[in-house]
Image (tube, rainbow, N blue to C red):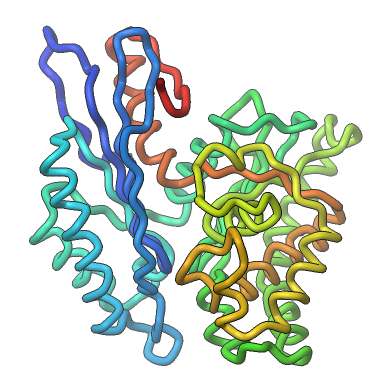
Amino acid sequence: MSLGFYAFNADETPLGLYGAVDIGSHTVRLLVAEWHADGRVCPVHHERHVTRLAQGFKDRGMLATEAMERTEAALCSMASRLRALAPRAVRCGATGVVRKAANGPDFIQRVQDMAPWKVSILSEAEEAALSLRGMLSVLEPAHDLVVCFDLGGSSTELALVHRHNPSPLWMGSVFVGAATLTEAYLQNAPTFPDQLRRAAQHARRVLRPAVESIGHVLRRHAGAATGFTVAGTAGTVSTLAAIESRMDRYVPYRIDNRTLTKAWIAETLRSLAAMGLEERRAIVGLEPGREDIIVGGAVIVEEILNCFGVSTLLVSDAGLLEGLLWDGMQSLAARWGVPWKWSGPCA
């Protein structure tokens, strides 16, 4: 995978600032981290904008003009920040809805014309692999086998992996996400029980082939008898964790390895569904701009846990954004023989 990391001269060191940009179907995110001489890699800047890029996609199979303009405005702001910070390299990947949209390549060209970095549309396999890399860098699962999922605005990437081997035993992507499920079934707030039921049925139907494939691999794997962990990342999962911990100001890394029970998720889903948007906005931990799609995302989370027959979810803040950054930095570390270790915030 080539996403435009800088080619250093032989006498250079790769230490310094690096950036990553994730153009998601609901949110655009930026991470800049500094690589220190002692090997620590510390985040120095996080930025996220809710742009609802997938809004209106269902009706025409194309990105709506207003949604593209919102996303371009957010990326323009990020470009200004990156010019000020001047990282040595930036990786940028666009995901689910851009991959599916008929005008996705045109949108990427518009972004490329104003962005000081190379912009790539990630394939399903690339998105899943990078999300997995980000998650495995921070997760501490109870079992060696881990089912990881990245629940985005329009797609959900799933993978089965051994915690000590980053090469997945199974990996795939399904086109169901928090924004697209909401647009199709859950536009009312409060949400009617029949809408919840139909949304859950659709999510289950779309997830089933991937779940069955992972199940076949689990049954073949000798270690399956000892059990497996289900872990999730991205906006819905991190928001649920922030709500559960009553986090009034979201701090990345504080939710890593937090455990949510299926019972709590089910209760919270029903509570959120019964609320109007203003009531949801008042909930401590609920990210502004996610109040309309949190129910759709929670439906998918609940169905994933139901499909795998587990009662807990392990949470990871790290995912695709971190995977974009760390994949490139790990390659440079191997090439130059320098230490590399993600440390979280540095003092």
